[in-house]
Amino acid sequence: MSRSVCCAFVLVMVACLSLPALLLADDTVCIQCHSGQSGSLEAPIAEWRTSIHAGNGISCHDCHGGDPTDFDMAMDSERGFIGAPDYVDVPAFCGRCHVGVFDAYRVGAHGEAIDEGGAQCVVCHGNHAIQNASLDLINEDDCSQCHAYERAALIRLSLVETDTMIIAAERDLDRLYRLGFAVDDMQGSLFNQRNSFHRIFHGVEVERVRQETAGVQSELGKISEEVAAIDSTLGQRKLWGSVVIGLFLLAGVIFLLVRKTYEEEEKS
Image 1: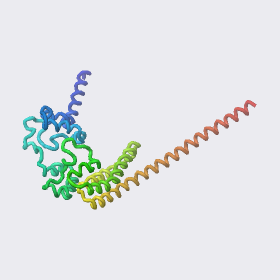
Image 2 (image 1 turned 120 degrees about the vertical axis):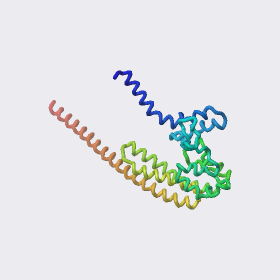
Image 3 (image 1 turned 90 degrees about the horizontal axis):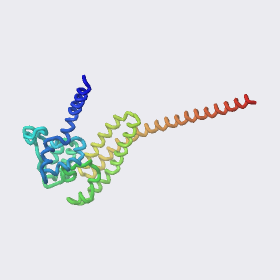
Image 4 (image 1 turned 90 degrees about the vertical axis):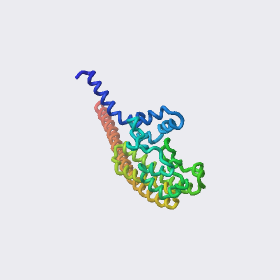
């Protein structure tokens, strides 16, 4: 096979392997069509590009359905097109992926009041420019637009310590992973506790948040103990390594002194 044919084959393979990623990102007919519009029809594209959804390869059709490869069928119900949900249907719409959060939300104060205009996902998270969720979303400026901030402040206070523990665990497990330790089990446990934590505050009940947060902290504490045990082992290894190096250095010094003494005796 000639060199030019080999190069062409490689290029074709790269293009084929890249196609799914392109479809998940900017090459869907949804993006192409809305990018050519103006105003409210174009705005979602720019907002989506900055979102955590875009960062994770989640595009228009993953939420709104339809066929992202066919202009004619892109908005056809036979291809699963849903479109934009009504206000009261937003939680179930988002809950198709965020199942645990939806379950907690619908039995909480916000979910129970949705028919009377209670807050739903878009109110707090936005729709297309959705960012990585953090406790910054619970703040006086936003929460007080609908009600007094006191209860939200108590909920946030209960969550801060747990959030700090999760961030510390993520950092520790990443460090141990880069050192070559097997941390799959601990990462799985952390994943579960992070999901449980995210469910907790969507129920917006202070006492329940306090109780369930304590449970999550207990599990995070177990991860912290495992990390501490590994760090202790690392510390012992470093200590013994230092001792061995020190002994080698001492042996080297003794060898040089003995050699110097021997050479001086030979000269005399």
